[in-house]
Length: 291
Image 1 (cartoon, rainbow, N blue to C red):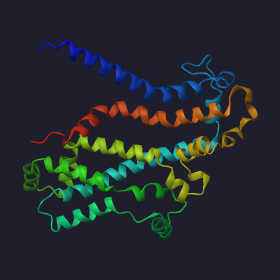
Image 2 (cartoon, one colour):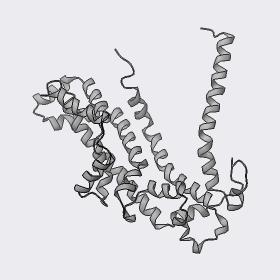
Image 3 (cartoon, rainbow, N blue to C red):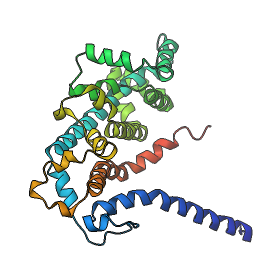
């Protein structure tokens, strides 16, 4: 089918508009990246930083030489890996029985799950609960409160329901238990949605800082995002500059330090996405077509 002149014009205008939006969306990140590699002299100039005039790694050396930064990185990686693994495990354990129509009191259990999506206990009751559980200043405070998510359970449950029940029935005839059916049949068949939910969970764990600010007072247990929040929002660059004795302070500024910390914080999670992209696209398309 041949396109008309008006359709071509409309397509070109769409490309220009979407391209402009993409450039505007990417520029803040590119600006921060360019600023982080800039020297102090370049960073203090009032101009657009499309490309650093001279590459300077002083800010990154300062960031990676700080022990608190490395501790935050380690805690964040531990939290993200362990939290994502355990969350996916308990999400599947919760979604599998709810996907079975013959589960006794299934509607009641579904109602309990839905209620948690609508109502929250509030900050003070949650703090008292965390305190009574002995999770204050405990690394498990990063994992246990986020162990299950009602939305994730419902998403995985809906995918499990799309798997033919005949697969589970055949496995039961061969003597497989429900756990074996879940781990050896349902989960391998659910890679797209499980990868998507795992990516959501990993991003949440990587970006969380509020729980560390409220429940954790020990600097050895702080996460990377709390460190970033103190430097970028509160302007506490002294957290890094306290170790600046061995560095030439003329090579960096507080702004280049903030930019370097920001880049170091967001790049790891961005590097993971390309490897999971094919599963992520399949996952977000689930349920988009109704038959």
